[in-house]
Amino acid sequence: MAAGATPTHEEKDTESPKTSLYEGSTQFRHWRFSPEQLRTARTSLNTAAVEAIRNAFEADSAGSSSEVLFLSADEENLLVKLYVSKITQLCGLFRFPEEVEATAMTYLKRFYLKNTVMDWHPKNVMLTALFLATKTTNHPIPLEAYTSRIPKTSPSDVLDLEFLVAQSLGFDFAVWHAHRALWGLWLDIQSLPDISMEELRKAYETALTHVRASRLTDAEFIYTPSQIALACLSLAAPQIATAWATFKQDFAQSSPSSTPSAQPDSGLAAVLEFIKTMILTNGSPPNVEAVREVDRRLKICKNPEKVVGSNAYKRKQDEKERKAEEKRQRKAELARKAMAEGDPFGSELAKEDLDDDDD
Image (cartoon, rainbow, N blue to C red; front, side, top):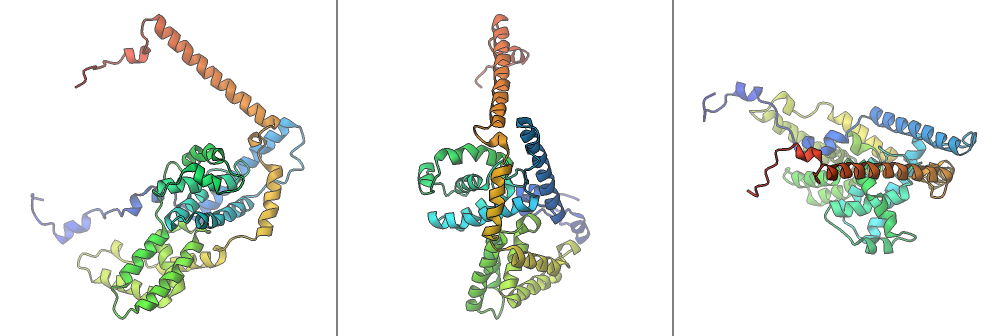
């Protein structure tokens, strides 16, 4: 096509559809799963952890693991869910904004897609995830001011896990939240005809409570923020959600440049029903008594390599120190050889054709 020429409809149709900002995010690329993938990931992680911890018990004392009742993947998830719900209480204490609360919840849930509660108890991970969220959302708080208001918590309890949490997140700190999508819906719906602002305001407030409940579920791992937001609005005010969806569908179909890929998903209603069922079924904190029993058993089946003072912990530390010493000796030997050869920078740099000109 000549420079400056206007593309025809046929040429437009062959152009690649633009990727949305969300589809270009790390959340979309790294933290989207199907329900089956989530179940497999948690089961595999739990199975591997149980095997490793069983071996650690056996190395400490033969036959000692036979009477240990290890946690299942569902029991691990139940304990995590309890501490996800506790983030709301902490945010209320510090008066953190909703962005911090939602981000910390996401961080905690993501962490336990890569780690097991039998290695890292959710309490300290929760505190670290929340502290990290205050920084990544640009609402930082001094560490001492943070830990001083939480009973039996020292700065080291938070800092010792900070890198581990960040590493487990893959350093993917940006999170796309459903409450932001709901706000966008609220603004967009105001342009619809015959909409009562009072009814819309009440619908928004009710929908927001459902969005908050959705954070206790796996919805954000399976569905997009906009789908979750629309499902929550549908729970709060079905007629408003339907009116908005119909308006958008009519607008898309009347657009001259509309393509089949630009049309609303024909399965949207089914998706919304799945989300609504998930929120209504799983969007509340777990039974405290059930979790207390899980936590009691966790004290017995916790990885002994993580228990300070245990024989397994000492062996692990000795092994780490041995490897660190070997690494130090190798570096010292390389440095000694480099100095003996008259090259203090080492042979690798000597092979480079370095330009030491400041320009």
